[in-house]
Amino acid sequence: MRIVGIDWGTSSIKAVEIDSAFGRYEIHDYRELEVTPGMEPAAAAAQLVSSLSQKPHRIVVAMPSSQITTRNLHLPTRDRKAIQAGVLFQLEDELPFSIDDMALDSSILLQSGQQSDVHVATTLKKHLASQIQKWAEIDVDPDIITTEGWAFRTLVNRTISPAIQEKPLLLVYVGAKSTLLYLHWRGFPMVCREIRWGGDTLTRMLVDRLGLSAEQAERVKRNPAVLQETHPQSLVQIVSDGLEDIQREIKHMDLVCKGMAQQNLNAIYLTGGGSLIEGLPAALESRIGLQVERIRPLSSLSPSGVTFAETSDAKMGLAAALAMSLVGSDRNLAINLRRGEFSKTSRGREINLQNLKKPLAAAGLVTASFFISMAVQSSMLQKRLEDKDAQLKRAMSSFFGSVSNSAMRTYLANPASLKTAIQKEMEKTRESARVLGINTQSPLVFLRNLSKSISKDTVVDMMDFQVGAAPQAVSAADKGDKGDRPIEAPVELVFTSTDAGAAETLAAQIAPKLIQGAKPSVEEIGAVGKEPKKFKITFRGMASEGGFRNE
Picture (spheres, rainbow, N blue to C red):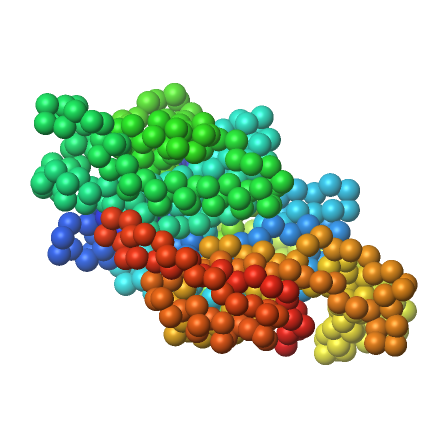
């Protein structure tokens, strides 16, 4: 089977073809087509697809990470139907948009005893429809639309040993205009985030500071030795302040890792075309204090041990990872957002009648045998239907705990009654969760109310979000006629904005509704390069009751 992974980048379109059969695979080909000035990206993608040696059996693409939200859930069941219900139940309270507006897929990553660890990816239906339309415009109908994070999970699991994965690691895919930061731990995809920083950032700095053309600056990034006579300092020294953004984002991911895994990052791996900048790993390693090294996806994935060119190795990382997500056992786990109403429509394939003459002749003989076997098959199908009915009854018994035969017949004959009964059981589960839940003041609820309170016209970036402390038991002395006292929840919010007046606007929107006595402190942040001056806005106080109200 021919599988093609396509990476629709900002400066070029990349594709990797893999032949997979009987559990083995081979990297058949890889291609890249640059999006030159004046060329439409869609036209470049169409040209690349049309240049493939043959029509692929499967095409794999990815949704942008900026349009995806993911999470890992721990559910106390192994039953697939119960897992699906549990996923929807948890997402309903956690996501800031309606379930009806959401497209999702999940994959069971680990099961132990009666416990299941599930990875869930969600996006808005309008974003998914837009992606499908984008590919349809160039006459491409992808079989799999997955996430960049899931593709990188496949890449890391196939190229980095499980022993190294025992500690969290960060894969940094440096592109031309953007960079993907993927956090991975013990085979699990934790976070995949896109930032607007890439190799072009350093190219522009070289053009401005050294008076080079864009082509000359690109050559200097690969071979800085040409500057030794005119500029004895290293390339990294010349563009040192251009690395501050990526350095800050890596440190931010380290904090995220500490919060999710209770461990700091152990290593950083670089790939992508922008990672080829000479001296970049050493510069980041000295700034961050962690091991930083490049990986070579194509060479590491090649089963024959072939070593690919360093440039191709770096640029083809995401495309190769997308294709590998359908190879071997990974194909049964792959996240695919093309479900339900977005399922791929079946299309007829071109048929060469000349090649079908002999098969059509044989079909006549097969037809006679077919009618003879119909009687036998009829009895076998009847037996299978009876088995399926029995399986359905067992599934209903496991869901409801105990159900009488009369109720079982009612449910089978009237799906509306079954639906009502299931909803009642799920409501009981929700009520139990409300009563027995440990953390009644969820930071996710506060974050959702904060998102609703800040208007769309207020443009700020949230840099830090701290709400509450560890849950504490409420003693009997704290209970009176007014019920349980709410646990005090300290709040610290940090925003950045280019607007000096954003602090007053934010204060009016979130205090005192969300934070009691919140008076923002404003700190000016100096401009970096061509970036405008920013202001750091900090709110500290105690959470108001409205911050945790489920509305």
